[in-house]
Image 1: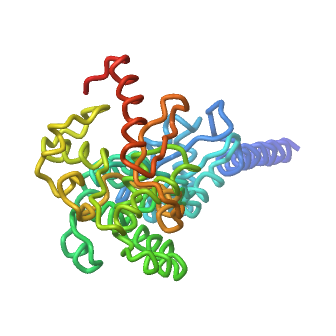
Image 2: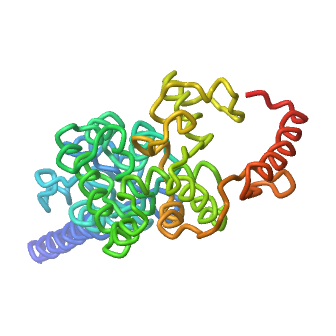
Length: 347
């Protein structure tokens, strides 16, 4: 009887042990193991990261790192780490976390516009994907790539069409550049190429004039009209006489792109630069900024009118007054000069 009681006790203890072990296994695999209050948290795993880096990234987000480690080892995750951006949801268990880190690289939407140089673009993109600004800039300026695609340092910025694009966070600089070339080719559809040919411009020239239009007016509905002025000048063999090109020429000459210039002076018009369209009739060698799609399409579909001049409209800020004759333009200009002098804007 005594031996029987012992056997029963041992059996009970065994069952208890099995229960405890099973509960531990359940908690390790299927029990909740997140400790953040928000509904989700982002984990960024860099390219070539080791397992320790992953654990360091998870430390602030999971309750029990040791139980995660047990499950990760069982699922052979430490030897199969993937780089990327991963979304952990509140209430996930270790099994969910490992499965997410192994296979669910979440894409992001990146966007960019209003960049004046590839240096600015590289900085903007580096804040959104893993590639740093230096590697992006090197890729954007790579002479072999530029030559293969009929680009150069002056026209390189024109390949990047501002929009919203889906990328993986761990995109390399070369992958970003390649994708942007694909998007550029897609943007220049047969219909857009045909329109460029009909108005006598190459895609690169369209983008350069569009960059001037972009700088002249922030009003999308006015851009085709402004583009029409520049196309009238261009088709009639005039210089473009665009203030934004002079401002860019000053910045390019001084290499001070952070300076703010609100007023172009007569002495500025003599600056010897291929970007100075008051001095040279040719279209500048490249864009003076990154034009929006609306500006590019404004050039391709410019408004057909007889205006050759325009100046800021002080009665309707953001818009311009247009003129067909120099006499009419000078009257409009005097009104603007009086306003800018009254505001004390000297530069």
